[in-house]
Length: 321
Image 1 (cartoon, helix red, strand yellow):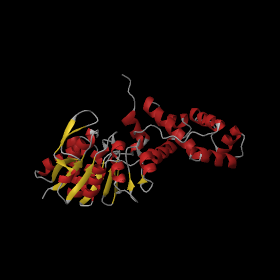
Image 2: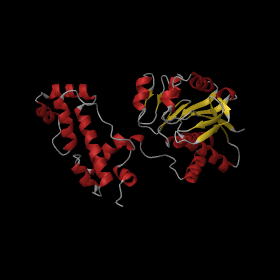
Image 3: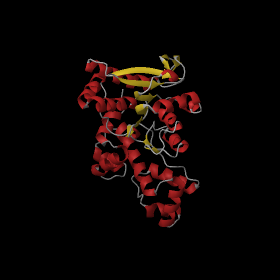
Image 4: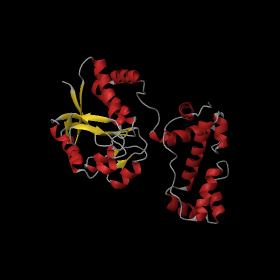
């Protein structure tokens, strides 16, 4: 029997949040030479639903028409999600169908809809890096992982932004039909089966809070502009005229991160810029950004972005035209 997969959409949803996972399941069907999955699209009301890009998608069913139980409920995301959080028909329909589904999933900011339906309380979840803070602040009961490409917590699956829905769907195919089929689907779609690194490698640099104190704001600017300087806690404390202990306490309170962690991340950001914009060898990159050696550069990159400096350069280097 095919596995029933219901994909939930709404006005202004992101088209690829639907198309990416749908193509993974459809390609699995093609390779299985059988209907391993039966895909249906549902919305609050059946009929044409406009996407964020202006292309209409036809929902075959209203949420109330979806037969239960079902295998997989997958909720799309999009920039319009915040405006739908008080849509009782949408959120209530998702909550009802989730109760009869073997597994529930979201793509991108669709995690906010799952959270609004009460489905992520006490769960670990991810979403697009731009939405992670919003998810955490609106729903403090959710354990937000802002870096993972996708997260599985029991029968609840969430994924990061847009293309991460493909990663999530491939993992579902692997669970349902084995690693070999998932690998063949990935090859057919020309995508990674297991994408290296986390989503922070695609994000803008994650910054600390801006301090209230003008001297600390100036110190942040100094750190970012001088990665090779002596940026130890005693040296930074002397620049602000504070004792090392008092400086550490004030800096952490006003920025949200300890000074040592801020310095490491600032140096890592400097290294990332050099990797993306220059052809400098890794030992030179390490020295230029204050990390000293290629070994330290490697450890810092793996700690912050779960990817090696070499892989990052291969994927993001800006080639001259």
